[in-house]
Length: 87
Image (cartoon, rainbow, N blue to C red):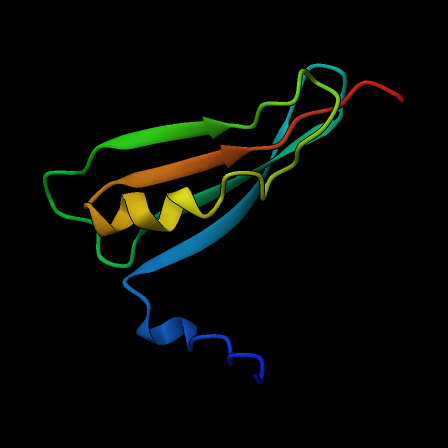
């Protein structure tokens, strides 16, 4: 089997935007917003996906496969990365 080609982003019904949020100690936390390409005038529901892992494992991509599915239902979803404890 050959590897499938990645879809053309312009054909997707949603877009992903990465942002950096400054926090108290001067560090930044990455946030990825999954939203409809065209947001309805009256808005849409949203959810925040915070990965599990007990502050030891996980990252911005953990559970990210659920976010496009949520946008297919008409919502917006955000995944949040945060600092992990040292091993």
